[in-house]
Image (cartoon, rainbow, N blue to C red; front, side, top):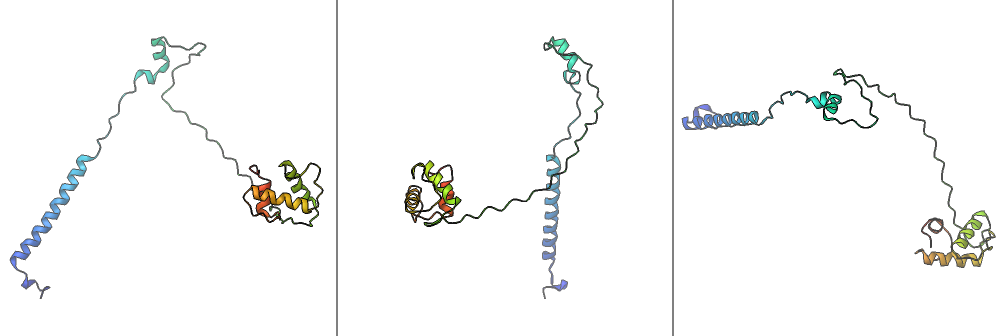
Length: 172
């Protein structure tokens, strides 16, 4: 019923044609407005003499810096600027694996304990000359005090967090 052209009244046809013509008119107006809003092409102008021949304009103005060398004015022919040849990027070197941080505990006896004790001495947690490499009860007390003063759990074992803080610049 709706698709049968015989059923379309003359008023419907006129309305349809009117809508299509209105849309075309709007499209034409939009295109005209866009054309007028485009920027106008810039006209070429002459280069002022002060820019095209800076030496002569400096002479006329009496401006010459002390020790300046006067050369001929530049030519209008541009010269080719040599481009640098990029150097190849060197091959990256393999980053060494970080050494494993092991937890130091009471009873340990090694170089890492001695280095930790030396840092505890520098921070006044242990007495000078007590860095013997043996993790005893005095070292455990010093580690616990360091942990308390630096916001760490005072368990007396020097694990990753404690050792990282101990050897940092903001250890206290």
